[in-house]
Image (cartoon, rainbow, N blue to C red; front, top):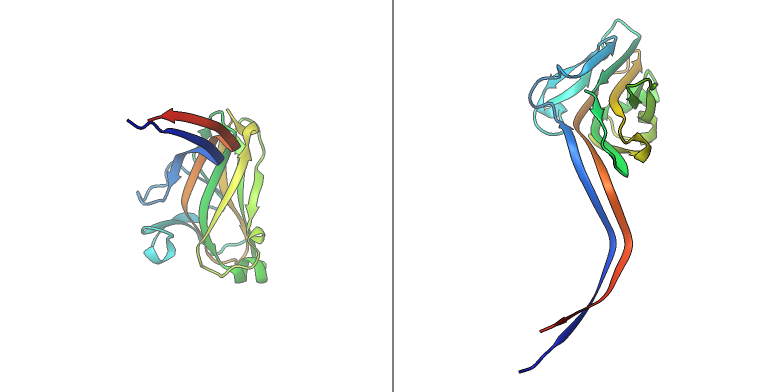
Length: 191
């Protein structure tokens, strides 16, 4: 009977343990758990051609009276203890009205609801040159200092005649741990 000894070296370049704990695609046709502030120019839009997936998206409507200063604010979330958090969304908007003519500014923000001010995570200028009314994915990362805080996110528009802006397919999640460049040496097995 022959015996073989196998020797393995296991190397792991990167492992990420992540979990998504909230998604919003607006397909239930209900934003009653969202808060609309300011000039209240946000609504669900039922048109598959202006949704990233499905039929619905959240739409900023540019109609007068101007100026607009309005936020669509998510429900609140108490973040677990984690290494970092990710907030991902898809957006589509007018490059001409928001950037070239500069009739408006679009921001994504976060705040600690226990006394924190809104912190800008992203604005449309961060996208550089983009094609108007194409869909783009954006992800922003919050570090571990947000662990345990109760937060809200907002899509904020400050504008005059700035045309439409759309949001869809939002995810909020966390990364528990990332293992990088780990090697477990020589595991022997006899057969």
